[in-house]
Length: 170
Image (cartoon, rainbow, N blue to C red; front, side):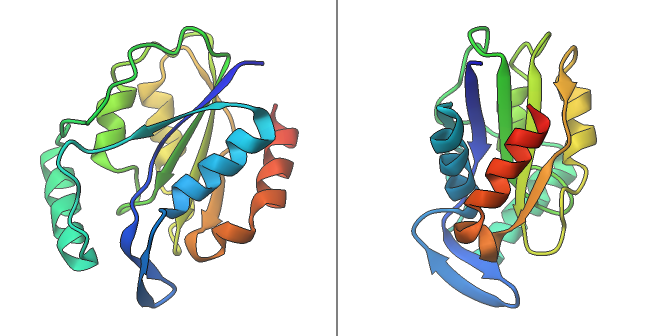
């Protein structure tokens, strides 16, 4: 099995169960690295060409504007093809029920025919949101598996949970 983890993650000021805290590495990136370690998958981080604000409240306004406009913001680097991979893990924080718009920018450029897609999210109460159904719409021809939702504040202790999810779904 050849696998890749395509993910969006944001460090800086984040929300953790009622409090704001600055972090050096985003929660979804931590989960993505666990998946790569467990499976040997390649990592591809989707990054907005102009990063979201480091300040959480300002970031919220930027994200909400993009969602209202159904924007597809420019991204720093684009993954041109996933032809070499059988399994595509897609990781995302949940922003108002779905993935951040930069992830849509990237995923809509790829051909998912014949791929297995494994969605995972980090959140502080939103679970998977609409990510699984959104991926079913975006990833035409792919088999989208059951997703895994991990509390962002607990992600650093989630490696065993992630490994169990992988083993039960692949």
